[in-house]
Length: 320
Ligand SMILES: Cc1cc2nc3c(=O)[nH]c(=O)nc-3n(C[C@H](O)[C@H](O)[C@H](O)COP(=O)(O)OP(=O)(O)OC[C@H]3O[C@@H](n4cnc5c(N)ncnc54)[C@H](O)[C@@H]3O)c2cc1C
Image (cartoon, rainbow, N blue to C red):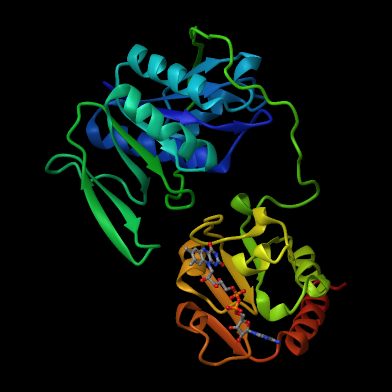
């Protein structure tokens, strides 16, 4: 028996959320007295033996260009094949965008119980019970998986990777590949920005900023701090900012070290995507804004007066 961790990559580089899944899977293998093996699909430039640092013993690699981009049906088939070959009874996947496309289909194919969006290691003292956040992060549910094969998709940023010294064995895996059912004809990439899902610092704006013409101060502060920019759904819906910046229940879910919210009310649907941030700073002119209840630091005031002062102070601090 083993724990198989699916390692997601983009343009040949392993995603941060997959290092978390690797470390989580390795800890789970330790807990259940089995070994942690990883599966990498597509060509990668990263050194796969370095996954050993996260506790992975063996990496199965299908280095085929057909798997460079996600094709959920094909990936599900290959992961199921690798799970059978490595006799995996637990499969761990990051609940990132690709993981969300893969996990349900894999669960159906393997007739395996799935907990989508786990936030902690399972309790294996009496069965196999996995904790996940529900009701937009307002509560937790502990879900027991009874099927012989179990699948866990791990919420990004919910588990801090533990680094060790190991070196993983890397072995090619001969998967049966069939003709793709989908073909990527074009990819439009956002250039020159820090990806929101990977960012440690995030500066975010809401409808309180009145219009897209006022985003200069959000971008300037983000650039000074090396932060990513985000926004509320109201802002993305108004086309002030692109939808990939929208965070919350129906947008991205993030957990940076700093979430700096300017002119955002803090509706429950917004908080659902940001309430795992380590430190939350809120600027809002309404002292009753709900965001202040979730904030570590709150400033009651007008963003148009405060932001230029904050930008000046950061510039001074950085000697710019
Ligand atoms: C099913 C569903 C899903 C949803 N999913 C999401 C989601 O994923 N993400 C999301 O964000 N929302 C989501 N929403 C919408 C959510 O309920 C809120 O409507 C939205 O978050 C409000 O955005 P906002 O805070 O930018 O705007 P507003 O609610 O208009 O708040 C603007 C804030 O700015 C403050 N302000 C105004 N002027 C200034 C100033 N000069 N200086 C400082 N502060 C100022 C105001 O006091 C106010 O608090 C969802 C709603 C539903 C029903």
